[in-house]
Length: 121
Length: 107
Image 1 (cartoon, each protein chain N blue to C red):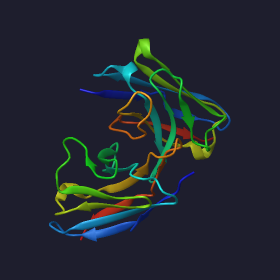
Image 2 (cartoon, rainbow over the protein chains, first blue to last red):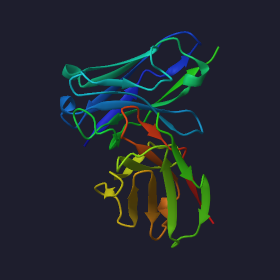
Image 3 (cartoon, each protein chain N blue to C red):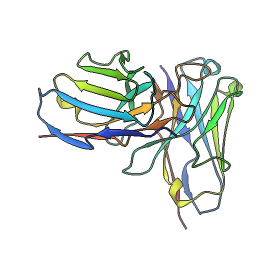
């Protein structure tokens, strides 16, 4: 069974940093692209970033470009999101989502349960 | 970025009703269009990919159609478990974008 478990969320002050992790199991992690998708409380879905199986192809939403960095460690079956210079508008549930292809199909057929990031002073 | 616009934003329907949700892209995305269902407090679930391909395990009452800029998600006979919010999402552009969502409520 595919499992994606996010961690690292919490309350952080504006301007500070946070690192999210996603632990994957139940599939061959290094065969697939993985993404981060976020959802502000009561709002819609927003793609944040995605990374190919070999970390060669990486993309970011304009709203986080230059502040967030996605990475993966295939040996540890883990995905990361380093979030710097956090803003109040980054407050959201952050989901780890599996792509059905290694490079990028660009849709999400398995999702984690999400981790909440709250940016507030 | 490609803008995705769903209509309506919400609708009320009864069990057994046929429900149609539309999604329009700001430019042609051929058939790179996907649909998700989200229930309160849960992660989204993939229903349809490639505009019309039913994801494994999804009931056949769900169907998708369209190409270019205009797409439709249809629920042929609404069931109690279908009350949820539905999102379209384009995968044509490297920057992926979602529609704003359509909430399907009980009439």
